Image 1 (tube, rainbow, N blue to C red):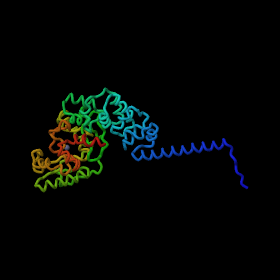
Image 2 (cartoon, rainbow, N blue to C red):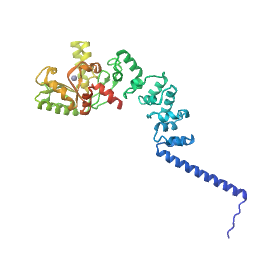
Image 3 (cartoon, rainbow, N blue to C red):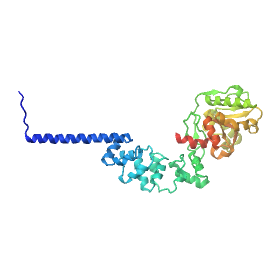
Image 4 (cartoon, rainbow, N blue to C red):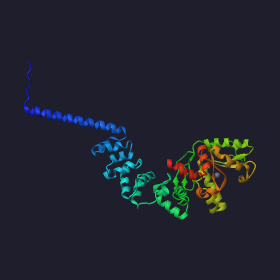
Length: 377
Ligand SMILES: [Zn+2]
């Protein structure tokens, strides 16, 4: 027999209250999920969305789909309501403390455009340091160049005041550490690619031995004694080039290629004993700093002349070497940048693409490195 349970009135009220609360909860939760899905679709993170909803900024952010700076702002505990308009207009960079740094820069009076520029030229730490200094009026001076570094600002100013180069050249030189003394405070090189830079500020060290070293076949080497080696890719390209020169009726040969740390030590000591400090400072690299140690550099020779600079082969190289991926490394006009006196015979393999750019834009490898390579590392 069924028995109807008769509830007392207060219990009925309780249930309907609970029911309503539950229903309300479902509605709110449902709405939340709906908004979350909508904002997530336009690029906002779960964490940011929570703050967007609780700060009542849903309709605001909908006008800024996929705005990473806004997203970071709503994720950050440094978020400041008064800076909201700025966040939406500043170009995002993947920096941990981007919002703190934007707040500090706004306080210094920088515009949104200027802040975007500042953020693009350094990491978190650099920006933080930069934000501590007095406001800089003419940021464009250096920072319209994308390879300018925020952390080098004072060095740019000092170098420019001292040497009077234009902005671009100043940036290139300082980025290459040319405002520092040779062989002091050098960068330790760990790059084994054809873009490796070795010079008086980039140190290979005594452990650096190129991978895939091969011997240059005898017929491509000048003189009887042949110990010339190079990195596989560079030797292959050199041979293709020598054959092409041969087709043009010339005798282009290799004089020397890879030189180990200890071989460079010997060379350096020999020249030092023979000609003294001044000579080696201009012409001979200290061990660990020579491009010959990379396996990508060769000294070329003519089979018809003992002075390469006077030979037809030299003229041919100037005109054609870039087509085979080689660049004229120590030009007269670039001595100030390369730090090496003009050498007619020394060419460096960098690959066809880079060689073409250097040839067209008349850049030394150092300049190419500062403008196009270092930035991407
Ligand atoms: Zn050389």
